[in-house]
Amino acid sequence: MAVGAVVVEADGGSRGNPGPAGYGAVVRDPETGEVLAERSESIGTATNNVAEYRGLIAGLEAAAELGASEVEARMDSKLVVEQMCGRWQIKHPGLRPLAAQAAGLVGRFASVRFSWVPRERNKHADALANAAMDVAAGKAPSRATVAPPRIVEPPREVAGPDSAARAAAREAAARAATGRATGTDPATTPASWEPRPTETATRLILVRHGETERTVQKRYSGRGDVPLTDRGRAQARATAARVAALAPSVAAVVSSPLSRCTATAEAIAAVVGNPPVRPDDDLIECDFGAWEGCTFAEVREGWPGELDAWLASTRVAPPEGESFAAVAERTGRAVDRLRAAYPGETVVLVSHVSPIKLVLRDALAAGDAFLHRLYLDTASISLLDLYPDGGVAVRVVNDTAHLAAL
Image (tube, rainbow, N blue to C red; front, side):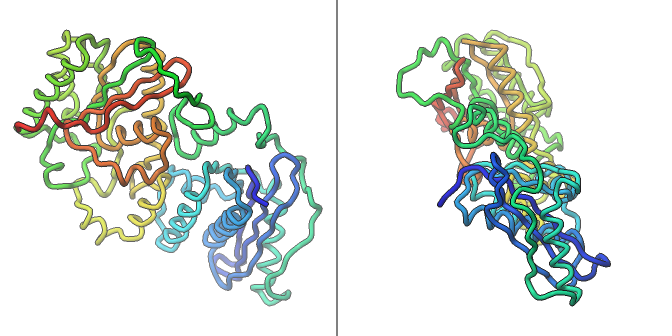
């Protein structure tokens, strides 16, 4: 029988690091603490971190087999939790394929939240892992399991399918796991076909900056301050004319602080009443770290494992860079601020391909595959309305009609 939300507790270890290694994983009902599944296996000689990742993978696989839609994954490994959340780099080449495998499993659920817990609150998984390490050391039969009490600690309050806190829990899980903006989760946004008065909405006109040398060369262009080309400046002027036609009255123009965006934003401001261009650091492009200035082929050749892990999960960051989950978190903050500050007004938001894609993904309540399937041209326009009750209407995506003559 399929279940809704579950808690996965996972652990792994080795005696010697590397040494005889094993993992353990437990899947629980979040309301009762009942054990729904256990996994335990010795994996020969390995490191602690490899065993910990194997435990997480086994727990996620077990949750998927149960048909779970939401997962809270609890581990006492700070490294695995931080890497899966995209806050720490995955430097060890032996961990990258495991992180990619775990990220692929994460994509099978509606939401996954990773939580670090002290070791004493992970005793069941720890016991399973230790039994498996005994096997690896030749002390017990293969695939050892333990039989602890069905509930080994008082259950923590986690919203279940019929709980009054379900909406809040889903929103918190989505923010922690993917950084999605408030009001765009299908579970928390009112569903309606009823026409809404546009004058009550905050209208966001999303503009990608004009062309640069790196966009022409199809190179990763993150935090490097690359200026517009001559064609990019012409694109900015054409885009400004199109924005003025769409919105004769604009309350604000906000922009990434990088010059390719501020130059585009200034061209727009000049034809919509000349409001000051307000830079917002939350709208800056993703930090591509060591990949900055490289082509996709160069990254594939130099960082094949890291690239696979990055493509598999928005929680994985490029080496020395930033994950899309982190970008989504800050762009969500920016959108929330604009919704609150400009009710019923129009705001022009000038940014980069990654932040705009993430805003549109969340507005459409789409999955992460959307990021790889949506193409956004330079100087393109997208438009969405944000309603006071959390409703969203996406009206235009990647409009480039104004660039036809260039």
